[in-house]
Amino acid sequence: MNAFVADRAPAPVEDAGERELLLRVDNVSLAFGGVKAITDISFDIRKGEIRAIIGPNGAGKTSMLNVINGFYHPQEGTITWQGKVRRKMKPYEAASQGIARTFQNVALFKGMTTLDNIMSGRSLKMHRNFFWQLLWRGPAEREEIAHRRKVEDIIDFLEIQAIRKTPVGRLPYGLQKRVELGRALAMEPELLLLDEPMAGMNLEEKEDMSRFIIDVNQEFGTTIALIEHDMGVVMDLSDRVVVLDYGKKIADGPPEEVQASQAVIDAYLGVSH
Amino acid sequence: MFYREAGQFKTSYKADQALFPILQDRIGIAAILLIAFVAIPLFASDFFLTSIMIPFLVFALAAIGLNVLTGYCGQLSLGTGAFMGVGAYAAYKLTTAFPDANVIVMVLLSGVFSAAIGAVFGLPSLRIKGLYLAVTTLAAQFFLEWCFIRIPWLYNDNASGAIEVPRREMFGFIVTGAEALPITRYFVVLCITAGIAYLMANVLRGRIGRSWMMIRDMDIAAELMGVRPLQTKLMAFAVSSYICGVAGAMMVFFWLNAAEPSSYSIRLSFQILFMVILGGLGSLGGAFMGAAFIWILPVLLKFVPGMLGMDIAAETVEHATFMIVGALIIFFLIVEPHGFARLWQIAKQKLRVWPFPY
Image (spheres, rainbow over the protein chains, first blue to last red):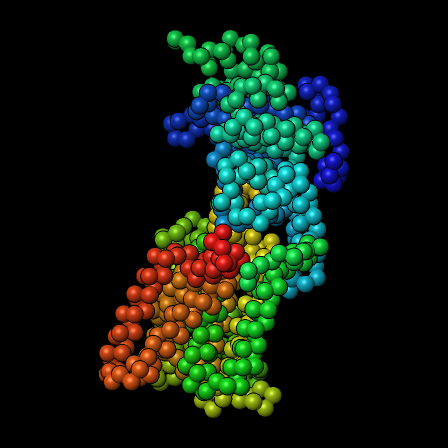
């Protein structure tokens, strides 16, 4: 167990339904002109759990994540984050309050190295102003080194030491996804939103990524909300699953319960209306 | 073989994050500084200093300024010439208003004015991106040029409409004005350019430099990581315009001695932009290489016929120079669209494994 892991207390294992509330979404609706992306959805995310959001294509899963981290502003409904009710929020406010995320199509900073990409996740925690940065020697350098230590712990954790100085544009897709996870982890988030972390990966990469997600959740105690299409992964990893279809919630509960739900089976297999 | 970092182990993050972590680079930069500070002043002629080195350093500084904005923060700007002009006029106003103040302090202070104006013209960058932003900065270029012509206060109601640099002394040396020695001017320009280049290298490797590059590479992700787009972009505009302003002030104070509004026309903006693109976007070394290519090469080319003993009319040489430089620009952009900085990186990689291909 490396220093990054040891720094943070493991989450106590309890029943998912009993844990403290971290985020609650109440009656949220989001429309783009006439297109209703999300209609009247309510669900909650509890501290320390892995919460999966699933549904067929176009169900509104990514829109839901964008609402949570402030990129879209819903027309109706409220979001309660750590006890505070809010209607809308700027993305950087969400970031500074501990919501980090990864993207469905990798959104790394292509011109920067792996190390700089993960360091960029520390932006909010670094405070030396422009004039200290000009000098570099002294406070700015000490701050940079302190954060470099944390970043190196994440690099060790994700086993990407060899590509530290490689520009991310040159990395294969699987590693890019891993660097993106590292960048989100560098923010030390309360809530980590993962948008299809396993899309386009082969079996081995999926196994690695699943292991990292479980480790992040169990060792760091980070709450995770996850969108994923690989049902095997979703059912194995998540504590609770919410299912969306055409912007509406059709099921919510533990994996086994959701799997047995007739509405979910209909949504995935199709049914004649 | 020649450029191999094998065996140079780093035992601390401090050493790993140094500006030049590799020994060969440190030797190289020491050699360049030695040439610039010792060899050139000792051996160079006045012509070499005034016509080649001083303008080269001024343009290199302006290219660093534009590189901060375009290369590092990804905001295309065509207003460089005007921002340089703001620096020049501000320095002129300052030094005529306070004749006893140190002229170098005034030159460095003039950048503050262009930084403020640059930040104002950077406001549209929150909504407008890419080529469209370039067009809005074009507005800055035309508006400010108009100010330089139409506001007589800026050139102290001078009948010629131009600004003429007064004679100023520092520590017993004449630094500006027609009587200033080329060698004195050269040292002032060299110190300012090298100093600002070093300070910018510090900013660019830290948090602020990273936040600019985050905005450049993926602005949505940057925002979700907690970077505020408006503040970050405006800061890039301000820092970039500060550097361009100082370069513009140095251009008239230590090189031209006098300047008209047309000295800071769109032509200058394009010249600086070409230096940045040709040198390499997002590279400080590239700014120097681009400035050398665009400024020094044409000057040297003009001497080639004379050295070869060919008797060609001056205009023909001039035209031939234009054509050769133009052809070379196209050639280099085809060979390596990322500029000289990338070519240099590739060369380093080849040197590392030489004599083997990989």
